[in-house]
Amino acid sequence: MIDFSLSEEQKAMQKTAREFAQKEIAPVALKYDKEPAFPGEIIKKAHAAGLMNLTCPIEYEGLGLGLVNASLITEELTVACIAIAGMIGINSLACGPILAGGSDEQKRRFLIPLNRSGKTASFGLTEREAGSDAGGLKTRVRLEGDHYVLNGAKCFITNASYASFFTIFASNDPAKGTKGICAFVVPRESPGLSIGKVEDKMGQRALNVAEVILENVVVPRENRLGNEGEGFKFAMEALDEGRVNIATCGVGIARAAFEAALAYAKTRVQFGKPIGTFQALNFLLADMAAAVESARLITWYAGSLADHGKKFIREAAQAKFYATDVAMRVTTDAVQIFGGYGYTKDYMVEKLMRDAKLTQIYEGTNQINRMVAGGALMR
Ligand code: CAA
Image 1 (cartoon, helix red, strand yellow):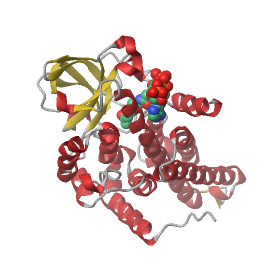
Image 2 (cartoon, rainbow, N blue to C red):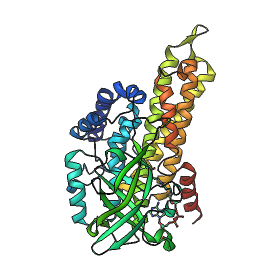
Image 3 (cartoon, helix red, strand yellow):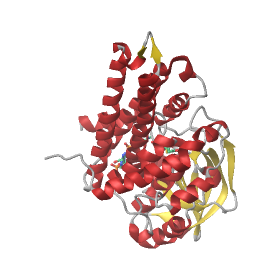
Image 4 (tube, rainbow, N blue to C red):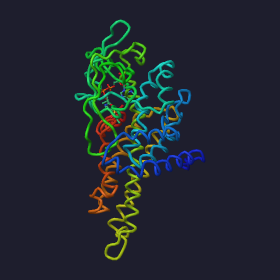
């Protein structure tokens, strides 16, 4: 029998996250949207409350949660503000390549101080000319004696301005394509590493996204993850988990929009009746509820495969594009239900619609995720 009910422990985790999100994030979400800033104090509190580094194993001082349990927490944080939730959760993606390819010594050296301190890190794959075609990256690495030298530029790097280290991908031989890509942990204070343009975005305004410039950056050999040429695989493995996380963000943002629209449709009266009782809007609300719940289930399904050690590449990709398309549709419909008010910055649904758009773009555009899922169907 399939049972979707949560255990007492899961309910407690969800409650902690919900209370934290409603107390610490929701009241300031619109302020951070209007005046983007680093939500450092909130991150510090999230760390103290045990709401950070969710999937990092306990032996490296993370919380050691599976993807489904992490999803319970992330959904609650995202309902309050996806951008602040993204800053709290960025370490999962940044540390994914270390967990995928690092030695035990590297995991201890990089993950324990990060998890203990509550600091944040960043994942550095994307470049101006290598977005969807991540394997076409131009950042170069060469071995010189006992160290590597990195040159290139990364763009759209989440949390770049505040990262204590970066997991960076670079090629030592472009002729080898993805098989020439190597992965490194690059400390922020490395000479030659600088932060370039900080993006001024349509939505998710509190999510810091910036360029990382690497000019003759020296990285010790012992910071290379796995073998030369294995980096692309580690990036993809990190993204597989990341896509379940972004699917969860889609669920959270869609739920926030649905809950706001439902409450409004119950209280807004036109023609002498609450607008939610008119069939046109009533059916819209029914579709929105079904979309949120199906997005959550497809996301938990991908997460539970991962938690049981099963292959989940296709399911992660399908959850990502499905749940984030739901987020876009449900937030757009929520604005429609609010009418003219929904189009103003006085109401949260306007922010939710702008925020949702990015979920269809990052961690693989939804076109790339359909390609991953569709490709798997044909193999
Ligand atoms: N999981 C594990 N391994 C994978 C994989 C996956 N999902 N996808 C590919 N691989 C492996 C393949 O098995 C292959 O290895 P072998 O040769 O040993 O079999 C190797 O990687 C190369 O695979 P492909 O030939 O399929 O590679 P490709 O060049 O055709 O690219 C792609 C495949 C799926 C399009 C990939 O480039 C991709 O995912 N692109 C999108 C990039 C992306 O998601 N960027 C997000 C950036 S981070 C971000 O947005 C985060 C943020 O800021 C919040």
